[in-house]
Image 1: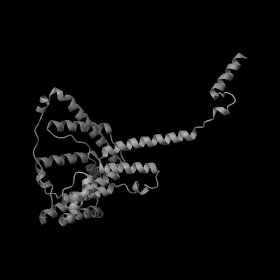
Image 2 (image 1 turned 120 degrees about the vertical axis):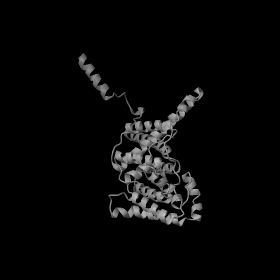
Image 3 (image 1 turned 90 degrees about the vertical axis):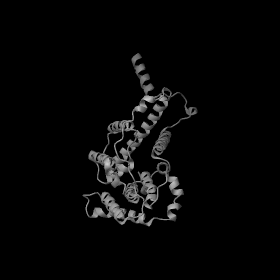
Length: 315
């Protein structure tokens, strides 16, 4: 989870300073001089206020999630002071219409290509959702139901396709924010869906006033929270060297490429390391006797027992 935490922090640096984030980690690091050359101090101040509320409000009470308090307080501050900072902006509203006419206009020659793309997206979505579920399990100390997760995701993506929507999967970032805010039951997912539905029906004009730096401040705190320092990075130099190298490689691919590629490379490297350890173990436990040292053929224990039984039978 350390790599995911680093990604969350990196992608929120630009919005925290009042700018639109780049599309990749490499571009974020390569173009960091642009926001640093002209800082938006109002956005930085509001983001810092958000982080301070998130860390300090739990000392007052933990009944209300501190992230929600920070979101409302910082948004109202920006609205009433009319701060010149980037906002979420206009959110489309209204119910989408069915778009099933495309199903009847598919050219037969394109059928196999559509199936290929659909299978690829389904596989990537399944991997992403299951990884998100595993991360949530590590945080909540629970066990998810993979079958239920994938069936629900499939039904949702079918419904999304019928109204012209894009396929989706489990969102690691939103899941972590939800769990850290106290949402650990199915009610949290239902509440999330209903809130998005109400935003679609008309509350979007209020959500459009939320500053991007406030959201960045919230996500930075959660990114810091999931960086596994105490159980991971802290003992990096105390674990076997091969394990440490694999951890660093997987974390680097997660940060600079994507999580799916990192998992694939990690599985392959772990398999190679396992085979190497097993071969070394077999080599240590195996003894070889040169044939030149044998005066006569030596029988195995099973063969000796069989020979003795044969001789006894003839006697």
